[in-house]
Amino acid sequence: MYKKLYRIHNKSTNPFYNLALEEYILTTKKNMSFLILWQNNNTVVIGNNQNAWEEVNLDFARKNGISVVRRITGGGAVYHDMNNVNFSFITELDESGGFTINDFVRPVTAALSDMGVPAVADGRNDITVNGLKVSGNAQRISGGRILHHGTLLFKADAQKMSSVLRVRPEKFVSKSTKSVKSRVGSISELIDKKMTVSEFIAALEDSFSKDTPTELYELTPDDIAEVERLAAEKYSRPEWTFRAVQPMDIKCSAKYDGGIIDIMLKVENDRVAACRIFGDFMAVDDPFELEKAIVGAKFSPEGIRAALSGLPLNNILGGITGEQFIECIFK
Image (cartoon, rainbow, N blue to C red):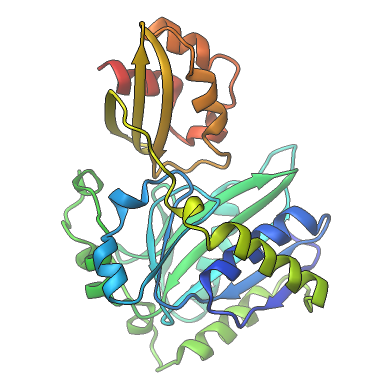
């Protein structure tokens, strides 16, 4: 899939810096493909379209020194600590056919297989082993490039994870397991030989470079300064993570195969005066264009349908369709 992968040896465990690094590489390093393996220390990372107040037990996070930050990709909230390894692939988007999540998950499952772990891609965005989730994945497209990243639960702290994440009951519909603790697995317990998290990272790097030429990319002082600026001006700011939501008249929620969606509307004189959209759907674009298009629309299925016309809904809402969006509001 890649002619060459440039590896960034990222030793930072600061979540604001690490997410800023991904965005910086995505938006500035054109015509190059990158692999970054990285870790965050005690952090909840929420999806781009999620409401932090609903997804995170903020009191528990504050009392336990857990950072909260919003990423630029869709999907749901995840808990990171130093026994979790994150991987990021950043490359040019193949306009002829694009990429599916499986294109990026394949080398990860192959790497786990090399370690004797029978991992498979499962559902919308997971990697599982024997039915237990060990990885969640998400994507973002920007300027003809694509970011795909995911988690690898080397040794899950299921107790802390279940305490800090507010997982909605809809997540468990049609699943036999009913809690975060019972749904996740630890890769360290599935590997035949004992391995530290550092050895696990090294094994991943070896596997990823087995079929693809790799070269270490050293960040320049200018690169680092730009990443630190983006971390300070965006990712570490509460305005980014805790987006203000004005009082709304209508709040509707639904769960579809494409994920959970929450739509909040303010209606005045039979027209939409304000709109906010949240959810764990696998979007690769921001919802702002959709929210803006709906403002001013007549509050009726026909009015909303007309406002949706021509928008790239597959990028904005992932697997949720326009008709499902309308159904959520008017069901």
